[in-house]
Length: 51
Image 1: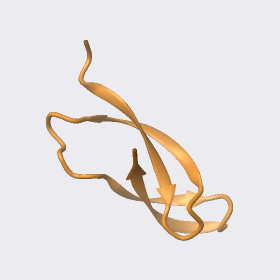
Image 2: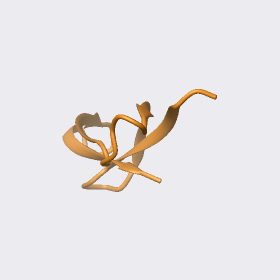
Image 3: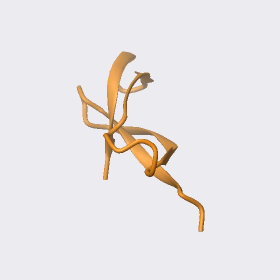
Image 4: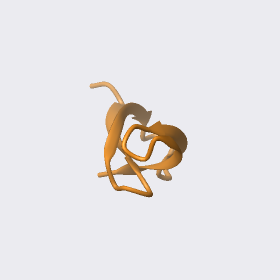
């Protein structure tokens, strides 16, 4: 079984899930925070990992 798992990234401003990504849960324990472009906000916002 692969340790790479799919995660969802949610915009912190409008709470829209706009991205999906992979994360190795063995090497990265904390939740990801990435600055990505949000289509709904029409700008670059911080996106946090959700369950």
